[in-house]
Length: 272
Image (tube, rainbow, N blue to C red; front, side, top):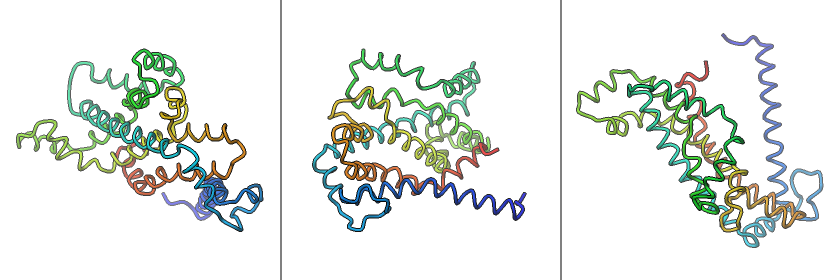
């Protein structure tokens, strides 16, 4: 039902206020990244004499590129692994009938309710015993299973008509062929939505990388920027330059795929 004019005006005003709340901190960080040290604490959002010195400092005088490589590599492998595992699990829950299927899926949903803090210590102890500390393996493997991803994709598999799968079976296609050649191309919106959510989560993660990969050679961007702040706590310009560069990949992925997010959630029935 369309909104009445007063409610429509209120909704537009709320969106404008929310946009300002979100954008102002980003603009402050961007402006500070280009400010010389003499203008760093001035109230003007944009410097009168922009400089690239802060970017030179963060790129040349710190292992920023090492941190970037660690973040990019672990994020790509982790997101790729999560998409594969979530797709296979969701297809199994949606298409296969086996004893205890609903119970297994309930366990998967229950895993979404467990606070992350409860599993950190036992997971860390396991990673330590396996010798995976300070390695990409320790950053990637414990987070490969994503209950939310399995739930989201299962909803999409269930939305496809049974005749689609029956036609594939009549053509002699097995489960993997049906999944790869028929279903996955139709799942592009859902996979894109899940990919962007997982990418932003992995890229911005701080606590787990700090815990299992604290050494300089294994640090991700978020941990590296925090270490830079502790080592050079007064160089806010270089820190803001690092934050700006670290935000670009996640922003680019979101801008490229954000339209598919809404489409995927609508198709899955999560919007009510």
